[in-house]
Length: 237
Image (cartoon, rainbow, N blue to C red; front, top):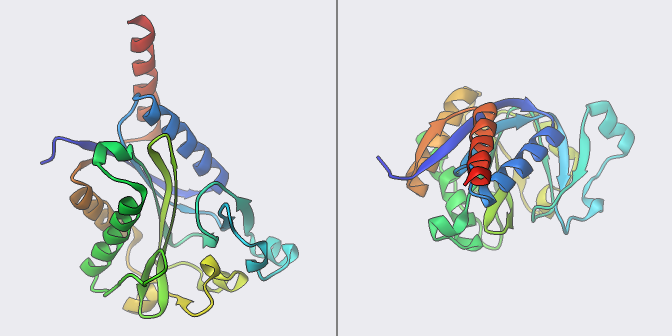
């Protein structure tokens, strides 16, 4: 058991804008000390996101084709280039106060990569880093992407692990601007789609182990109530 707790919120298949707004609320609460660190686990409705320095030319299809496929496009504040999120991909958004963990940005990114590598090892998938690139790979194919933003010491955005997504959707982009490697998934590597609930559990377990925390599941409503109570206590003090 650890003396440090992290909240875990398991969500379903969420519209990107709603999840992004939730992250920003949690970042504000964490910066103000109203809630503890929180890990969001979810899937997204189909979306292409572009980081701060992304090249629009890495989207390879027209707006009409994207609309036909039900894929929206969002430019956001994380680092990195162009990536895709959709159902069947497990997204993790850790809202962490990095100084409390003694982590700088680079160490934090490497810790996230190791969480994914160790989670995949539980499933018998031998994943690795690739020199000069951010993310996690199986052979020459990328199985997980990372992109974060740190605001006043608190992280948001995070990681995306391909469990059993619609692989054809990656044909619409040059993922992360990388042209000398492909994209893979746990389903492709294992020959079957692993249960998403079990993959969520594995990822949360490895996150708890590598960050030295106890992960306790909660809800957004419970966190909102906690933040409101803490804010009232501050006002009354």
